[in-house]
Length: 314
Image 1 (tube, one colour):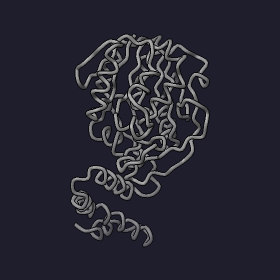
Image 2 (tube, one colour; image 1 turned 45 degrees about the vertical axis):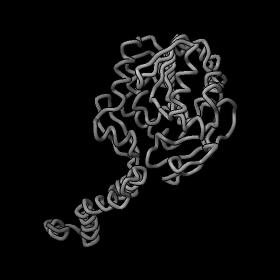
Image 3 (cartoon, helix red, strand yellow; image 1 turned 180 degrees about the vertical axis):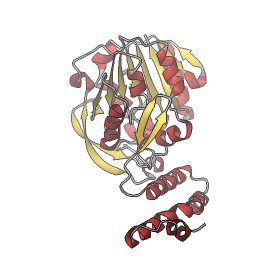
């Protein structure tokens, strides 16, 4: 079957429309070969494969497609067509973060207040809103924030406040990279650049950055979720008063983010995390008290071992 065969079955369209349809049909019919060429060309470079497939998806959908809406087990979510991080996960699996959400559902109550620092497009914050009283969601990327706004509306969420700022230790205009192939990997401009942060040639923008202690009057967040691609040290430094009232802090721990993006050590990070009595590292099935925090995290830091969510508890 050719694009001409498909288009010629319609007899009432204009020549201009016929030509446009032929171009679209040809693009779809040749898509398999083009995708195979992308994957073959990039070989074992997973970052370039992800970038190539994302760019190809945008080409396939056209320049005016700004989002793909996927129905998941937890609601409807719009993601950028080029996003092969969270966007690809929800399109492939119809779900995201299920293990985390199920574990949190057992400890949260309808009166709980939750702070999500690094909300991306809301695939965690929006389901959490159905479990608790209030969610505050922080997202610095202007592109991700527009999709977060859209997803709040798509799911009729009324108890989630969303804020387009970066959590920081001081007020400033922060240099920020908008990654395309993995939009959830957008981040403050690294202290030390590396291929894995800039392989997709991210746009550099300025975003408003604020200490959350000044930004929020409330101090009653019993749970904080933090996934901000290396800005954890700065965010924690600017929310010491909030942390005093927090029962549980769950945060991503990535050694190369500490080294290259924020330029801090494990000791620097732990200086901002006071008053917690237990650290759990799910990926290693380890836990320890305050005297062991440094040794546990330095063990991971020295071996470049990451965890999507280490858990500090009081």
